[in-house]
Length: 159
Image (cartoon, rainbow, N blue to C red):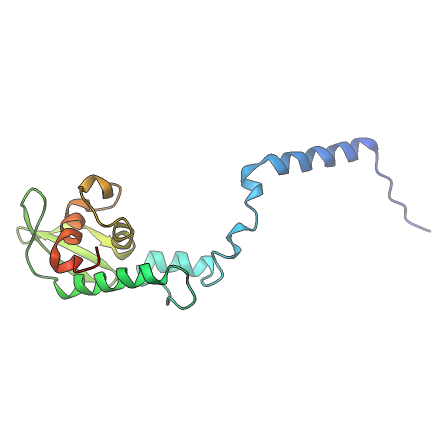
């Protein structure tokens, strides 16, 4: 009682057609690309960390370590100058407070109702040196962020 598998010509054509579609689909062509991206931190951990606003994983073995060291030193300066008065490009005074992995800005003693995340700060640092607020307009609280990153107390010798 041998079992024989017989494929009809239509099955072969359908299989060939399916392979052709898979090879032309840009989404399917990306299959497996993320393996090296998620090597140091699994995707679920990454999403959980973003939601909790925790700091990124340690830099060991990462190719972008030097850039991250700049971001880390700028972040330390941001932490050390919280509570001091800064001014926006339009000369509006503000202060800020670091809470966890984010920054709350204050104007006229009232808190701005959005928390700027460290991830957003690091995205802006990656674009430095900045010459205009429009360079970071896609980030949250960009007028305050621009003021911080262009102030000599925060920028230091980084750029």
